[in-house]
Image (cartoon, rainbow, N blue to C red; front, top):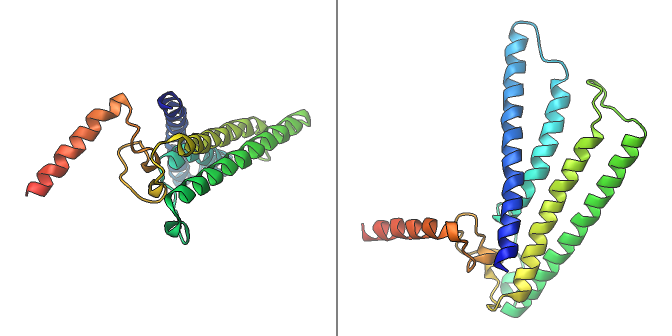
Amino acid sequence: MNKLVRLERYLCLAGLWIAAVLLCALVLLSGLNVFGRIFGHPIGGSYELSGFLGALIAALALADTQRKRGHVELDMFTKQYKPIVKRLVGAFNMLFGFLLLLVLAIQQVNRAKRLLAAGELSETLRLPYPWLMYICAGGLLLLACAYLTDCVYLLTRKDPDTEALTSGERNGVVTSIRNDVVLPNEKDDKKASEAIESKEDAK
């Protein structure tokens, strides 16, 4: 299980770092476009490039956000369920989230193939943008991987209490749903955070 969590962590972090680089490029592009407009020389196709970069950033950052429980979560009913029911409902949700994203990724790849075969190009810069759809499909597959890991973890963990789905301590990149899985390079971070908390309590 630790190997699965570690592999998923590295893949999601890779997507997040690529998204971070693209975000820096997007900010730089927007800044240069504004600066160029002051002198009457805006960057041609900046809106089109911004749209492409925004789509790639969102697609590649979704998986790590899911892994860290960074999305807004609403819980109206599951807090009243028994622990074993919470675990099964959580695993059910994660499994179907995985299947849905897998279908979406496959559909996007098929759509990109058809557009490339038809020679589809973007309107302003005439770029073969269907290639970017493959990257977005890769981001969806990363998100599907995060869902699958959560599903496997919920079905195999010994502790049936899944309050971690909606609450619990978040330690670095380890989500509350996997709070008993601490990777080797995260142990020092955990000890440091505990030391800081103990000092604050002493004050």
